[in-house]
Length: 183
Ligand SMILES: CC(C)(COP(=O)(O)OP(=O)(O)OC[C@H]1O[C@@H](n2cnc3c(N)ncnc32)[C@H](O)[C@@H]1OP(=O)(O)O)[C@@H](O)C(=O)NCCC(=O)NCCS
Image 1 (cartoon, rainbow, N blue to C red):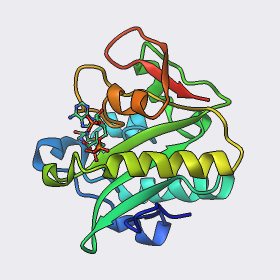
Image 2 (image 1 turned 60 degrees about the vertical axis):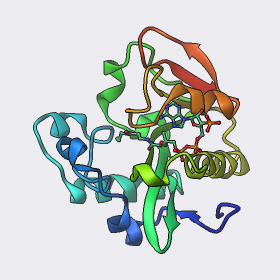
Image 3 (image 1 turned 120 degrees about the vertical axis):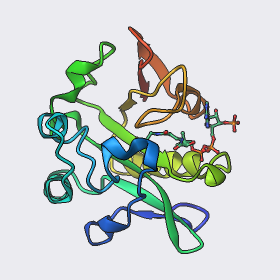
């Protein structure tokens, strides 16, 4: 499955190194292909930024679950991506989110990111989200959840407003990071 514009394509393991590099202000996270904030929280908190761990995580998810996201390319350069998987395949990060945990029968969107400010606001994030939702619906997953942020877009999965525009609703809100769900 691809996006409608030709700029959105499946997130393949062999293309994993192409994932967007995070800007300097997010240096603490590493690049998207080494950030293990969601996947291995304990190692992340110890300061590890480890592409090998992320590749191992993604290989397991591809085996157990299948496709886990898309990336967007503009002028032959990767500018953004979306990543998702069932909550059970992520680490223990959910306990840091008072509005959680996500439902076990839902697929969890952990990341939605457009790297360059100049590329934002042009519908690429929306296309990634729409393409991810269509992929999951086509595979029979009818519940999709995330922890977007109310006060800003500075958040792994972006701002709440984006999700509300795409039909998600807030199901639990204890702080700035409500649990939103599409079903
Ligand atoms: C959030 C993000 C994924 C959205 O992608 P995008 O391509 O810019 O979004 P779109 O053009 O598809 O916008 C769709 C909707 O999202 C919402 N939105 C986008 N940017 C927003 C922002 N900065 N604040 C609040 N809402 C925003 C709006 O509702 C917008 O609809 P509108 O244009 O009709 O107002 C992207 O802006 C981004 O990656 N921002 C940085 C996030 C970040 O700092 N992450 C931390 C790294 S881990």
